[in-house]
Length: 342
Ligand code: UFG
View 1: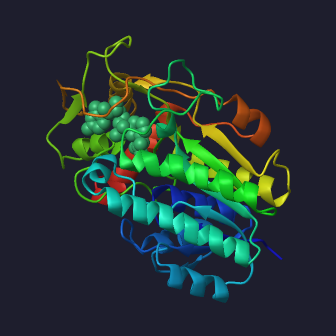
View 2: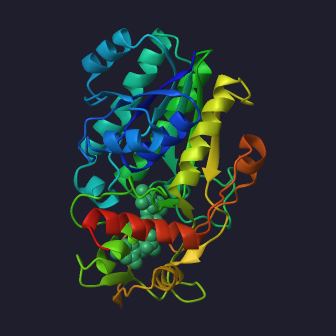
């Protein structure tokens, strides 16, 4: 019988791509999502890509009672991937309690039910935000964490601590935190992708919306950083590659291959690109114009970060496969599909 995976936040950007990869590998998926930042139509798209419609339940996992009822109903879950969380850095500064409540209580409700129902395995969406501005680059998993710059970032650090402490206290609970660098791009089918509500905060959706004519121009936040061209550097990871990192993590847990009950891995490409390089590559590979202007730095941004991915390469047997070029092509193909641009 195929293994059943609970994917929270499975209609969201990274969640939907992961559901596709799980189903392609023969897993049964049940999604829990409150649809607060995603659309139910994603289920149709997943079905179109994989030929299979995942089970779906709509509720917020910070609701303890509803989470308890869910676990009473779904008795055959083998593992959980927990994506469901609020993720806007700026908003988290304005609404810290919402962020702490939603992101931390949902994790605690899940862990409590996993223990009760003997569900052993959890893969969690963490972030390179836990490293802050590292003293040395690239960052390895031994690079020390730094105090969070935002309540959002702090929810990731505290979630990691909760999983570490809970898995140590409870034999049979095993957790893997994946520290994502900057996920971008879309599924090659252009049937799923990133669909931000309102004005995008992140770079690539802002670029694709500018290319599509929804925004007048991209603001490049700062060109006076200590980097070769003065713009900030990130490690941009293709969302399908990232989704596959979840599948290998699930297999590692199901096959009991982990070295300890709580593990964490960097999930990036190992390459840093500047904002300017990214914008220019997008323009070049897609043959479209993107107007841009250099403005002041954005508060809270770090200067540069990219991953050392040796641990994920060696332990998980995973590595990023897609090039930046094909990833930026996929991002534009998705935006065109959404906006009906030929
Ligand atoms: N940028 C611009 N213009 C924009 C948007 C972004 O110049 O309109 C720049 C940013 O200043 C930054 C780079 O593009 O230098 C990437 O910005 P994103 O907002 O796409 O991504 P961040 O690296 O700021 O944020 C990501 C995740 C967060 C996480 C953070 C940790 O989206 O969830 O990394 O550093 F907290």
